[in-house]
Image (cartoon, rainbow, N blue to C red):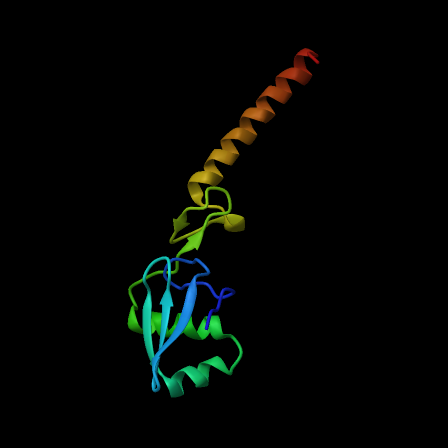
Length: 117
C-alpha cells in the first residue's frame, strides 16, 4: 500500500509507505529518512478508516519521539528546517529577499531622483 499524498512527520517528504510483513502487524516506513512506526493490524484499521490519517500518523510519531520537532521544507531553497517563517520561506531566504528588495528600492529611488531612465 502506497500513500504518496501523506507527508512524513520526520523529514516532510511524501514518501510514506505502508507494508504488511505478517498477518497481524503493519509497518509505516518513509523511503527518504528511514522513519519506522510499527502498528498492530487493529490499530492500523482504526486510524486508516478515519479522517485525518496524516495527523494521526504524526501523533503516533510524536508519541514515540516527543523531543523531535516538525520539519518543514522552504519554498525557495527546498531545504528542511525546523522552523519556517512567513509564507513557508525559511529565515535565511527571507532575509536575502528583503535585502534584494531594499537594493531594488534604492536603485529605483536614485533613478527617479536623478531622472535617469
